[in-house]
Length: 358
Image 1 (cartoon, one colour):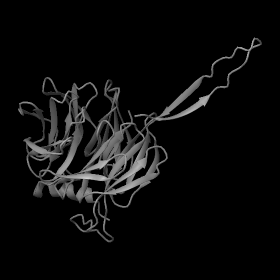
Image 2 (cartoon, one colour):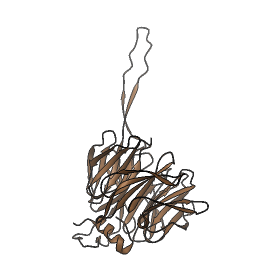
Image 3 (cartoon, rainbow, N blue to C red):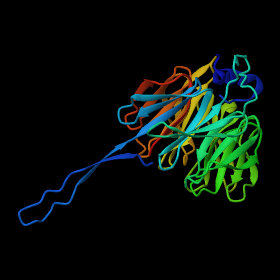
């Protein structure tokens, strides 16, 4: 089977259309000992916290990696293209978007038949498939609201976003967006979702209380977004402009900063000072860097080499490490943000989205 994600990336130049926590606690309770006067020593509970990060691999799998030693410990197979992935806020469930592939679907245009897209929900520790939820055609990104109550999924071919009740797994709303909705983030106050519409120069702003949609201009081929915790600064990667747009959400003023070639995902660090931009390029002309952008100075302050086709990016909750998927060499780069040292590990085929336990 030809790989759908790479085909779609190659189509971008022609069509302008791109798709390419709480940890588990293992408590060991030490038994209390009694002294001669019958006094007891309180039981001591030692807690070992396991933490993982996961990659969505378009070749049809999810890689589960130990965050302590960066070793792949599980490969979860799926029937289709796994495009994006995110952990629930409590770190217990991992959700992934799946584009089904029709039997014998090997066409140059990435045929996936008439079957609708899905979101797969797994237990983050046991890997058990908890639920499969049907959404729209060609689901792109999946994001939990910060309170863990909602799961949103962009349906790239339907120009919609599906809203799922995280407790019942029911689709409770389908909302129209701009053309080609793709990557997005939810504001820290859980009031708004900011969705990049790759087929036009806009961002759909979804009110998560009323489910009304409004749009703001961004630039050419917006891929993903990031939003600061105060909700005042929106960052948007502009693939066709090799730029990061920084938008004031109140005034709608847009400032564009030149980054690497073909920026894909962006992630705003935990201190809200820097935006980390993965520069992918294309299969024919790949890029292999991340740009670090100072959001206040509105300038690139560093560029770090990764693997080929840097796409997904996340930063650890302590701000010490960045993790980048490299689509064209099937790896993840782990970057020490203080020393700038880079370690690279092999994961599944065509890694796209990435998510890490806090």
